[in-house]
Image (cartoon, rainbow, N blue to C red; front, side, top):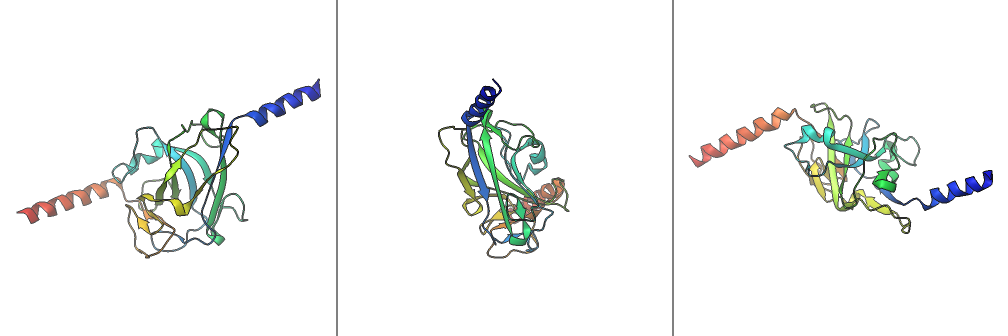
Length: 217
């Protein structure tokens, strides 16, 4: 009887719908901060999505944290494996979409259903606090949409950093988005940008508007 129960549980585990996403950079990529220096072990890499209907941009970055849902997380890993290895400037993680469209990393990550077709983003940060001491990059790929969990499809989905072609904050693959940089190297694979106080961008916007009005006069 005991053996039969073990077999039943094993079959349930095997038959549970799932689809693995392998998300990573290349070994030796140029992963830089706003000053053009290599990222260190204080940085975290998160793959995830925002609330349905919420589009992240430079006007609402103060709300990102409350609207964000982490699917997978790569933190400092001293050995090349399943995390962030700053010595080789390389991050890699395998995270699985399991039944109910949940993440295999939940827990410890909070539970959330990543609906198939939802845009995925890579958020790189040393702190999620909105302050000039924080550095962020928020990038994505036009092909990065969460797949449906699927028992019959065992081929992993692979999202390489070099396929990121959408930059909201910081930059990827020589393309910069919003944020403050003190160094702007021509070539990079990822670069974080300083996060100003929310009011700073408002003041910059007002200054730009006033300058435009003066020119018209």
